[in-house]
Image 1 (cartoon, rainbow, N blue to C red):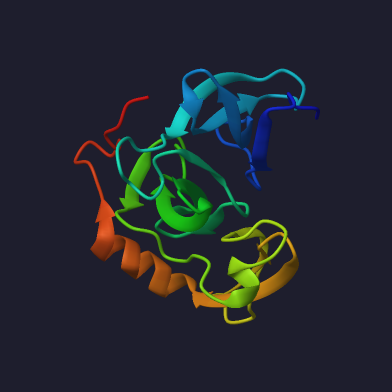
Image 2: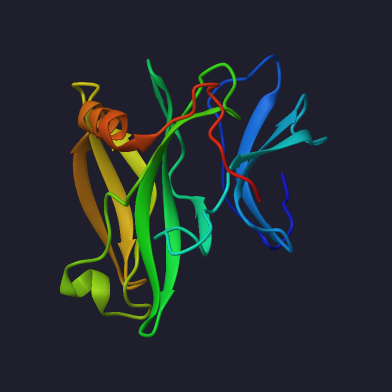
Length: 190
């Protein structure tokens, strides 16, 4: 599968949705840098493109640009997404992580989106390096208990680090601090 040069931060869901492969990705184009989902019966022909999660507008921590970080995590409540948001400051770009939850059978429907970021650069190895102020996860493993998330992330584009969290605690945080819509579709336009 070959994607366009400006289409990054992608993953396939681990099983088909309504008989189709599902690709979560972040194309960059004139309407902004948002997270999309596309479907394919054969991994060659893609269609059914839907906006999955828009970058917010205004002064939000994730208003400038967002993208998928590690692959989505399947939970009983839905697909848990850990995504990065970029905010431009006088000192440069600042990469932080947020959470969103999507319906298992309709991953284009956002059930909740955190109202603030949950992880960002703090230590010297995250703030100083080739590209400072970056904590950018690319992969994870789940512990034998089925709940411990081992999140592997790049720190300041110079080193690799490990953060751990409870998946249950992340879902609970999202339930307390997430924006939801009664219709099951999170409000937001591009």
